[in-house]
Length: 310
Image (cartoon, rainbow, N blue to C red; front, side, top):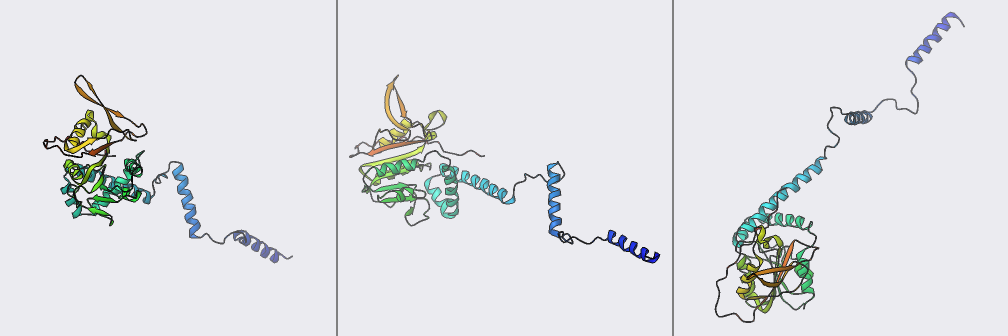
């Protein structure tokens, strides 16, 4: 090989070393996608080693917004709940007439609260109805989602401040459309909320037939005199003065069942179901005949059931 040929061969070899032929197994050029992947890998590595990038535990936007909506909804529920306990039934009716969506908001929050309860008092009332004749006519005052009507074969008149389905009658519960002495059972399940709650019970007395039953389920704290609640004996006395007798039966919730005289004071004892310490259920029966001498009834103030801010 001549000197010129050797020189040409060496030049070709150097050129191949400077620009090697790409392998068939490797891409010829790096795509923007791969560049982004490498960037993400570098960012992740920096975060793991305390770099200046944002923390890796930052919540996803959707989760954050959902939590924010839930918190706002909970705040609105507490506001509406407090209003219902501190205004009259007529005021509450007018309020929801102006903005029916507030009623939906309230019941959404109410359902969320109930999901945390170990037991629902409405189930005890439903079981009581199922254990009795299906021919009994029922008036459900403050029916909510009308669960009682959906769960029993009885004829049920469902009343609430707003009607969201045809089976619910929207009204002030102190003034229903029922005729006097037309129903056999009147139910108040967590619905003695207004400041004029006594007018609801008076309406129940009006529509009940003689010997009709009045069932009242309420949060226990409303009847705890040691913590600002009403004295249960005062409440029972007021209902009996209206024209009822207390039916002292042991049920599945906290029930008043025994009266004893100690030091000339009435001491009221409770039979307690330890699976649920939140509720109390009263059973009353309407008297066959009313006394001719009507008494001035002193109704105790029931403690409002308010939820704490979180």
